[in-house]
Image (cartoon, rainbow, N blue to C red):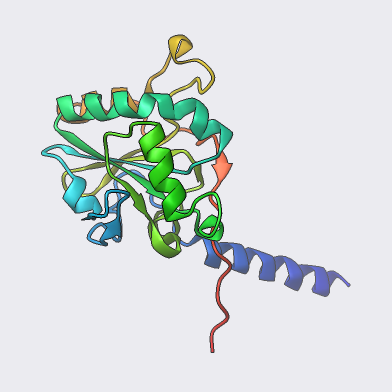
Length: 205
């Protein structure tokens, strides 16, 4: 009985490890940064295309998550802040499981228009980058420097409910430090949001 429990536990851990892959940690180089992704404008962008002189802010997002709906009112402001500091910004929708519904390309276009997005909003097909970087939630922010090394990942700030009550603006502070050539004080925070809806893995033939 103990052996059965042991092997079951090992199997579960192995499956979790396979699904999540290796976590992208601060200081490590991000994968798939040259992968082209279709934006709601019809143009294609890679992370490298969106990168500014000092780096790029990547946010994994979606159309209907309640946490996104509370935070995304700050997205355009983040884009302006990033631009001021010569940092690019791109937002990815990795909810492949919802691609025929709320996170379809058509719904992404509608959502971006309604919210007046001023940055590329792209389809992360088959959740390629979400899997490669082990993104967990929508939203989940990743800040890369110009060399595609991760310098911050986590929440946008410490208050999704009320922008006026934010005490720690994690992403803004990280961008300012990056642009100023300073050490980023907080390199990682716990992401808060809805789980990314990855498609079920196809069985190998």
